[in-house]
Image 1 (cartoon, helix red, strand yellow):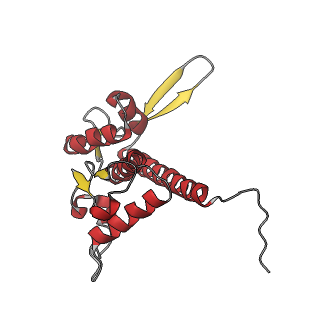
Image 2 (image 1 turned 90 degrees about the vertical axis):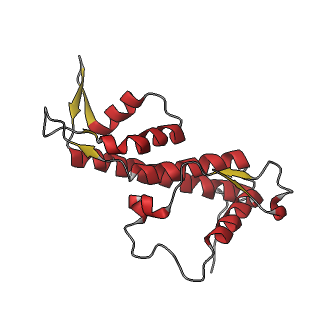
Length: 182
């Protein structure tokens, strides 16, 4: 999906096409359906989205960087949809539930990952390194889900810090300046 912005963004330095490929209806995302309120009365979501993108462009975030940020947000949402199951051979281990394969492979594309096996191993095993060897030990379904949730929180936190950094850069914020009020 591409989202073309109205005329007022025509002066943006790049084409203002925002790639929303990783997104779908709000009801399809586990993280977003934990709330009883999915729609706010008197709030135009499209208008708010346009305002947000315009603000990002105003502080100097490029369209390609906005698209990367949108990919991270979509990846965070997709991480919440990943399900695991115990394989027949080990009830204490975990493997990707086949129903999650579409979300998993879209998640990989959004994050620019190519090695599905390595990514899945990172989510479903713990690594133990000894002086002589490296062991990959299976983790439970619960732990694999926690790994996805932890990765989602980390990605979201890093994205937030990036937006704050870009905003501070645009206003000339000096982190070394001693600020005093009072």
